[in-house]
Amino acid sequence: MTSPIFNDSLPRTGAAPGRGVAVFLAIAFVPAWAWLLTGHFLLGLSALNPLLQLPFAFAPAVAAIIVRRRVTGEGFADAGLALRLRESRPWYLIAWAGPFALVAAAVLVAVATGVEAPSFAEFDALASGVPGWITLLILALALLLLTPLYGGEELGWTGYLRPRLFPGRTHLSILATGLIWAVWHFPLAFVGYIEFGNVAFGLVSWTVSFILQEYILAWLWMRSGNIWVVSLAHCGNNMVFSLLTAHLLESRTNTVQLMWITSVALAAVVVWLAATGRLEAGPAGQPAAGGRGRPARR
Image 1 (cartoon, rainbow, N blue to C red):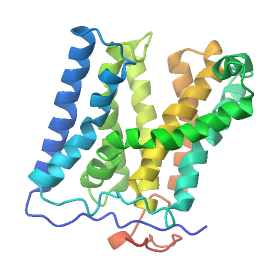
Image 2 (cartoon, one colour; image 1 turned 120 degrees about the horizontal axis):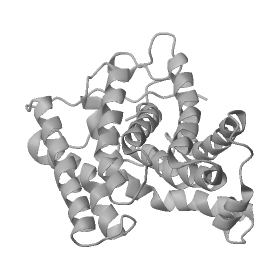
Image 3 (tube, one colour; image 1 turned 180 degrees about the vertical axis):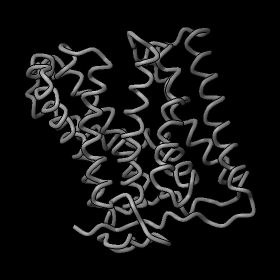
């Protein structure tokens, strides 16, 4: 399979890049955190209530839109908003099927590390008596329907912020974006969305997971130039990878143990991407020396 590499260079504007990033971060963090904490502690909204979750989740997209339109004036030429169904088809398929493969990898990690065999009784509880293959099919279809919701984050983090942090230094930009993305989620640990026995260690573990995820999302972005491919993968991480591994393994693990098991599966993919040069691109989006592929059509 050929590997098109997206031109990840930025449009030229009159605004200083640092100003756009600073305004983006302010808008992505301050209103989102304020609403999350106010909605939960003052209005009594559950952490699982869409009225609380959706404004929080779309804050990065709103921040990116405001900055692109009003602060830097750079527009949306590099935002990857076109569906590009034909050109991006292989990457859609990877983003769609990949989370299911990661579930299998996490189960293998659990068995290899002595967590014992997965509990299919928990999976049956998720299925509520429906045959397992139908449950998997429903989840696969749900990913396609829910992907636009995850664009609320990916239009901001991977599509806007990541290319603007340490341009030309891929690993540093991914590490920085993953760290910022993780910290943005931290308040969720205090409103009942996720619970850690040891909060400090739990947040560190969560941060590692976010950074590993960002490596994979950045790879899909650089290869496809398509924010919807990235959003599909993000959706798959939440709705398939995290959900199924929790139901298969959580009866034998706590939240942090499960997080490290899934992180090992993610890390294996990241190591493969790095070792094979799939995270690197030459000037103007051309393949790095020795890399495979051709420039993607814009």
